Image 1 (cartoon, protein in one colour):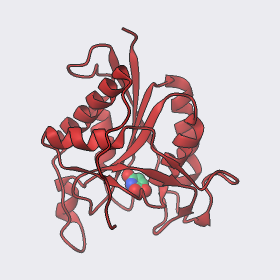
Image 2: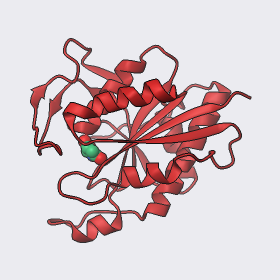
Image 3: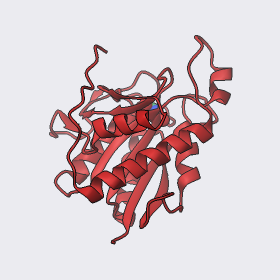
Amino acid sequence: MAVVRILVTGFEPFNGQSLNPSWEVARALHGLPLQGVRGAQITAVQLPCVFATALPNLQQALAEHRPDIVLALGQAEGRCDFSVERVAINVQDARIPDNAGAQPIDVPVIAGGPAAYFSTLPIKTLVAGLKAAGYPASVSQTAGTFVCNQVFYALQHTLAGLGVHSGFMHLPLLPEQAAQWKGPTLPSWPAPFQIAGVTEALALLVAQRQQGRGDAAITGGALN
Ligand code: PCA
């Protein structure tokens, strides 16, 4: 069986934080064969939380590793489960400055690009499989308008039509971050649980790809 090349991206910490769960998870998986799945190899790449450099870094990682599956990860403080993103939109509208101090407002990710791209991951199957394995998960209808959405949009734009399965998942905070968070008490999950859940997600994605199945017709509808 051909090797399945999996690229997992995570972000550096941002907004004054010293950790980002997405990178803690990604780096824990780097270089590992996917547990229980023969022939799958994981590479992790860290992306800067900087509008000006996130995309060149992403492009370089795609060119270098030529993945079959890409799971981009990001932190979403306040979310309380694995948030499998459905759609990336062609806008940057930053609520806070990025790590280089830039705060674009209503700037397209790619000028002239389509308004949006859908994930090409089987998002419903992923949510159902994660839940069945004991990991809370849901379909999210928005990846926001900050650097995560920018990377998700550029990822889908770059890989459109190439047969690579790619998408984005937001993660809750780590307990160490939540303990220091100023403002409301936010949900958090320990790193080992997040790592195990993402490992489960990757196994589901590889199985789905190898079996060539479509996505499950389960509702992911929500009001928010
Ligand atoms: N989360 C931010 C950017 C980096 C990250 O981990 C976001 O949701 O856009």
